[in-house]
Image (cartoon, rainbow, N blue to C red):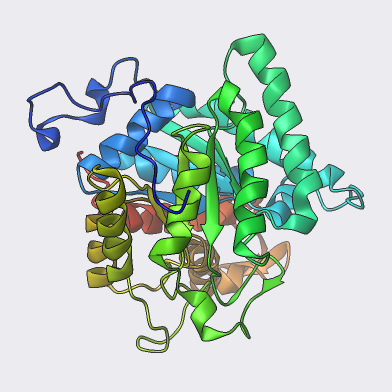
Length: 381
């Protein structure tokens, strides 16, 4: 079909009672909402609550248990949901760079280990948490397949998948091929109610070894017809999909004005979709390349149905800056195991103990997590 289909399907989970104002309701009022990792209907209800109430959940790339803890701590301070995601390279790092990864076995193992780690500790932070795998290009599909195997095994034992969501980024492929491969994977994911995030159009810049810095400018902007094909193909399979549509997004941080973001395009896509479906804002959008974005650009995106925004570069810097400031403040105590400004025989163990300086990185990253939450109105929702 060349137009959006308005399909009859099982009712989506409600994020607020009929007739009640959406904004008056906390996400805790969603039936069954809990602290810890949420998946399936609960995870999707959280997405709906965010979109209905004009906020987005920031999703942070993590590479260690330490960075996971910083995300959980920051979100918990605000009493808001957290979203933790692992890239393919970040996953391999999580389980240790000493493990071979020729068949993506380390990337599978690291992502699964990361998901289990978050599942184990998240309830103690007292907030709902979603666990996600980030960009998966066509050449990385063995990684995706391995995670789906882990989801299937976990589902057999617990009645829910290990992860809340996964992303397929086949934006380098022709659009028809991108969407058709995504459909085949969504068919595998739908019985477990795993949310699929897809990318249409290309996010510029460089991230996790993928270099799109030289891509043609028009590839950085999606069209209403691009989103139409996504809806027509995926919505008959499952309602649980989100779209990272390109509106000039670029990974990394650049000087203001160097990147031409057009978040108003997302509103145009929603208006076009509504005309085809009769449904107001039917699409769930994801904002990629969000680091360094202007506040007004974020606000426009939120108004257009962005329910998730990725943050990586800014929190990477925050993690490093915590260590940098600690070193500068304690430099005289970090030049040897013995000897510091207080005396040449004084020990320095309490300064170079990893718990000391890694914690300084966590504190700095936690503060940046809180800032991202506030930027996305992910506060007291």
